Image (cartoon, rainbow, N blue to C red; front, side):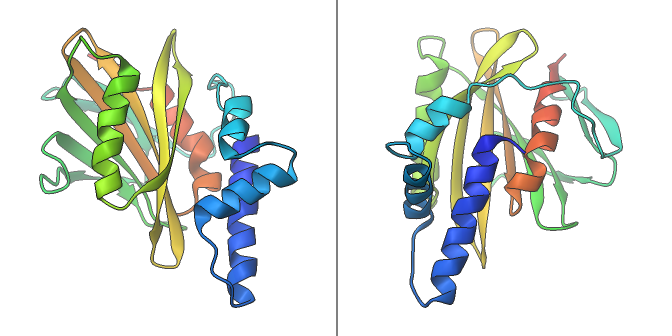
Length: 209
């Protein structure tokens, strides 16, 4: 588990403790409190300190993986063999092309988006446009970052939303193909700390074909 995931888990425990005492505390406030307990000025300072870490191929993988290829949408990636693929949901996004999901030990999914990209924009600016859309859908606690995928550094966007009695935590990886096309890998889970390493390996294996 990465340091950021440990801090997120600590924030979730703080929220649960507050609820047990009859006190309502927002997830963003819990993150800020945890950051200050560890000597940082705020949550963004924690992210800046710990997020720019390369993904590793050498981490042991407890999941049996299978290679998924899409000749229609020109990409491939490794997904857990026990996960299932499902058709795109156009009402979620017109750029969604396929989704994968599992309800074992929580709710987990990956949505692959394939969308037009304006080469006049930076990947960070493109990410901000997506953030604006997600904010209108009730997501919050947005944190931008970067991840090393192969030889390239990709922009990431973390965010979350209350989901029933849990927190639905998400990360988007923005993969820019050439000058006018972007793939976005949208991971989500109710148990992010348990799934973060797996999601990182899945992103690491994504290939545009």
